Length: 381
Image 1 (spheres, helix red, strand yellow):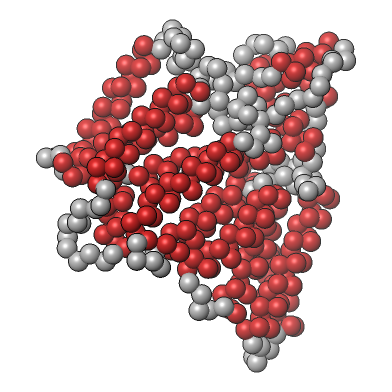
Image 2: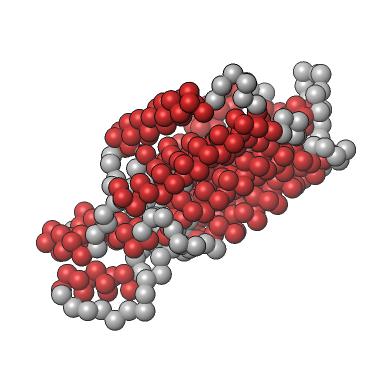
């Protein structure tokens, strides 16, 4: 499927970013950096963060006023839900057409306006589901929402639609299982299984087009996998779902299994993060470790919750300080120095050749996989 955003320009943005990073480390001279930026140009309209927010809000307000104005001529007091749904779909089609046209004409790339038009279109597509099918279950609504969100993610690589489709999928799974008598029993294991499958699926996608989406889905998958096996989440969630009246939640089945998950998963994340030089795994593991301390402190510690959080935070600070001191000189390929991202040899040859005015021999650039926008993976932190 042809993407609306120019893939070559997206690659050039990453090349410029890497070249700028090299220049900041004195690996490239200023004339070389200018040559690279001139050779690898990206013509997207990319405003700064605050301008992007302003454009986003302006597009939302403009869309609302436009729809309100048109509604004055298309509707009357006798309009039915079916008629309202049809008008909503017509508006959705118009905004999608306008979005595609503006991307081409204005060279937008997640510039605020295109994000707003995309979200408005998805909302308008989903409105008829509420109007025409008002007796569906929650998992059915979530499944309906998942479909346009996933399609939008595939086409536009928007991180918010990616995260929303991820959450909609888990709402679908959770609410569907709750319709069965043993649903609460298998729900944690089903959540962990789905999170693991999604994580490994997105790890295999090395396209630079989805680099940001891949990162956010990796983070969410790791977090959900851990929370699905966390003893506190499972026990208190079970009490909430089964409407337990007592102030203290009852013990859950397979409690020793969830004790083990709460201990093992964070350390597994940390070990894999260190071994693979993956910052996402490492940071998630550290946060999960802190939450595991809070989990066991909640049930077995003589201290209050605030004291447990303070103690666990202090322990992490001391551990981090000791680790930074230990890694002041690189050991085992790990250092506390700022991250120096690795760049494929083929990319190096292209950049060097462009600055020297030569034509490099290359079989193509392999973007992704951790070495180029792949979730923070590399040989040195």
